[in-house]
Length: 373
Image 1 (cartoon, rainbow, N blue to C red):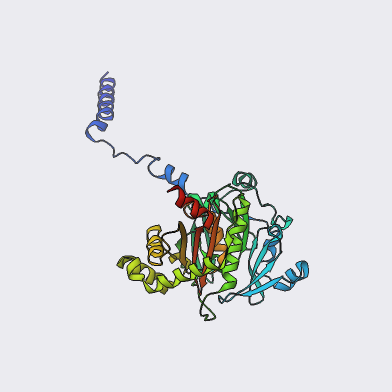
Image 2 (image 1 turned 45 degrees about the vertical axis):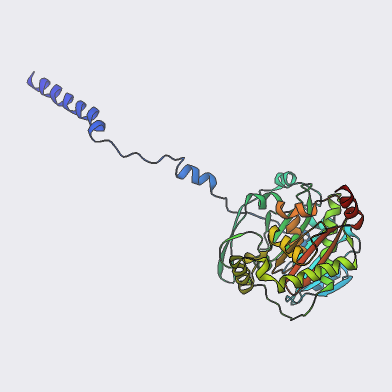
């Protein structure tokens, strides 16, 4: 009996301690999974996958001889002063193709044509159609020349210029136009070119510098013409009217370009001037300098073009003009400047690695605007 009573006594003591311990000695609460692991896991991007190399992607990094054997000589070869040569194929917009050649190897290929060589992609398809074929990734980590690089795509990047990796260690950027959401071009490129153009956030590593290999003076009429053709090609894909080109607009663009160089202090604040200088020193795509709308309007006023309705863009440094235009049409901020349905003139001044685009209403549109006022 005594043993039974002793057992009951010990049992009740243990039971009491068990119930009262959380009251007097509360356990420190662990952070909820939603605040740590669970949420972090949901936001952590999956390691990207490489798709099988096919079509135009097979030529990237290879000698030009194979491409010439398959497609013949280009209709035009342009020196760029950037260490590569630009080959152009296709007189018609529907056949248009650009090939960047460096040291007799293909470093980048920009396909605007509806060709089986762009498969599994096709010009005109939507992002949702691409998403049915493959996963769109936001993070890409790889090595180049024994250096680690980590690229992050923002939401707009994934929607309008997603990055695709091939199993031959090359990449493709799919450019979708903001206006219609359709695939306008597929740009195939190697690691070095991707790190030189760098249209995304670079989280680790440094962008490859944009260096002029040939010193040029004055304005480059060939590049100006190339930019105008590219802009009109992309506008027509959205059923927008092409820009008119005339000598006056070209002269106005060149005049503005020179005005900016002579009146920098009147157009830029001290802070903005320092940013521009830093951009010149860095000479990388990660530090591109572009005039704001207010700064461009000041430039128009000083250049005495404020009486006409005008807009435009000034930016530098530029490694590949066509790539820059593709980036503009895939960017909501810049696309709006080209989305007008009115008839307009265009002028482009290109010098070294700097470009100024001037968009003006046609004389007929201007006279109608002045009469309505």
